[in-house]
Amino acid sequence: MKNKNIILCGVGGQGTILASKLMAAAAMKRGIEVKTAETIGMAQRGGSVFSHVRLGKDLYSPMIAPGKADIIIGFEPAEAVRHLPFLKDGGTVVVSSCPILPVSALIGTSSYPLEEVLQYLKEKTENLILIDSEAAAKNLGSAKVLNMLLLGAAVRTGELGFEVEDIRTAMREKVPAKFHDLNEKALMYTEEKGIS
Image (cartoon, rainbow, N blue to C red; front, side, top):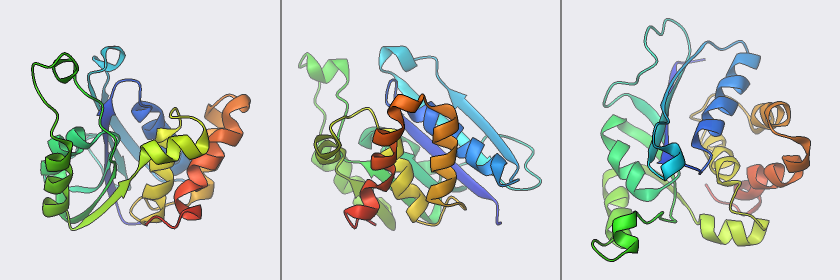
């Protein structure tokens, strides 16, 4: 397998870190070397969270250099924009179109220009997959499986280097059994809806 550089970014509480751990577990089960780095300091306060996941041989640092990410998995649109400098030319972005408003926007001291953010992503990204996670949450009956929803879409791009079944196996080993069915539905959602 060719080396892969993957960035996951979002806001605390969205499941970004669990998604990176599932990817790492899936890769290790296939015998692929993995290096990861994450920032989680603001996770419990709704702050910015990201993970760098590197898969392959002869990797000496867990951090991905600007312009070297094969794929960015954005749990939040503005966070995806913030991480775009890491994307390589021709790279892929899989992103939720549902924003998480910062406190300043919630109290009216600033705005969140979602349409401009999405337009910027469309203009700056050759391969963009926008996921309507709000509609998906309604269909699935929960917003708490955003990580599996985005992982399912990301796997189907071919940029991760493994299959849906690898993620399903990792999820079943790392997530309590009572959540397995819902997570599997989220993992399969984009395939069933023909999103790619």
